[in-house]
Length: 342
Image 1: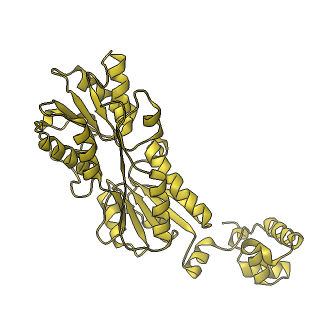
Image 2: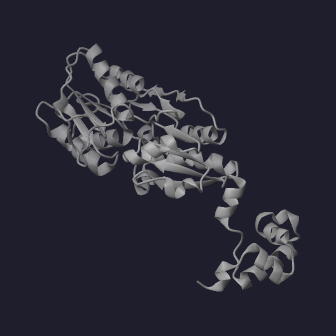
Image 3: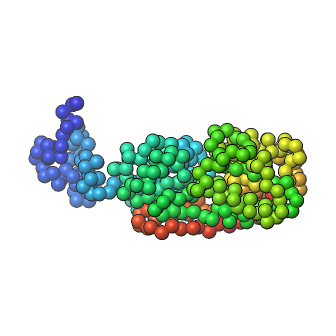
């Protein structure tokens, strides 16, 4: 290794004939030096090949880094393109920016949080990570943790009442003796779009999808509608390609359903577009409900009947809970928006 990479704060101070405090202030406390003096110090350090005090050592001394990790249940590419998840991240980012903190996006597909645990002040976990090891580490870490849209033992969580929300929108849509299908999201352990049939559900204790399924089924039971697992689809991601396949299967099935309950607006919008392209009248021949309340669902015509929840407010709340080290879980409100698709 080149010697200049081994320079310490003390080495540089000696070579420049200044105090270590002067060097430290030039990098970390610019208000303590005149602008000209600081620029001279930084230029001299650059010439020596010194790029500032060791960040890891600073974190160990101060006990904090000013960095908050947002652990995403899905891969980062999907999460930043999904309108619900990206709006949530925007809410987190806004609060962290206001508080002078920094955001680290961390994939829940990673094997462990240990590689970043020493360098962040806490974790906001959005959606239940599929990696059980990672979830276990989040329950044991000494760093603050806030979970969103799922629960971890001993950690504060932010949710809406997904079961009641699903019940409310389904009860509004379905009528007695109707044929009802459900386009579900992450219900079983399959990477492909498919009907669930008798396949065991996964993550039943923590998954918001299963809470929504429970709400749909309760509404169907109260309306006297038969629950048929051959009319429940599993969609592995709330993404157009997967949703489009399920939509085509539903619309082309024998004895097409009267109502389709969709676990996200993305799924519902794909179904709506496929139905309209086939000349199926909505809601006269097919009723559709969504979930989330994304902007596109409100703009489309006919506009979607859905459950609205504020993802940006959810993100801001998660960031404030973490920074304030709050320990109480919060259930946020939701709104049933009755649109033109039922």
